Length: 138
Image: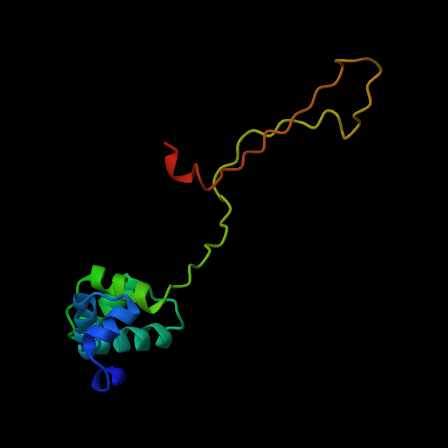
């Protein structure tokens, strides 16, 4: 921009291999202000006030409670552009406290030595549900 006052615009564009339309596009864009600047500041304030625990849904609710009506998709897009992600809390394990099934007697008593093959058979039927299958159970 500063060189434009010294030199001809055509010469500068030729030296930089830039199209005239691109030059005017960037010139116009640099003069415009961010229309979401104040909203971004509010989002940052709410996010840091709650120590990063609020995601876009709760921030949207908080803004709506303050009287700022904004679509949740806008909040999500702005949070992505700012680089804010909420902390995902891992849920604690809660064991099942209901009725237990039938427990088989321990016949081997950890004595796994057999006199001949196929006398003693043992298996483990502990089931672990992976996170990939968690939502696909009936």
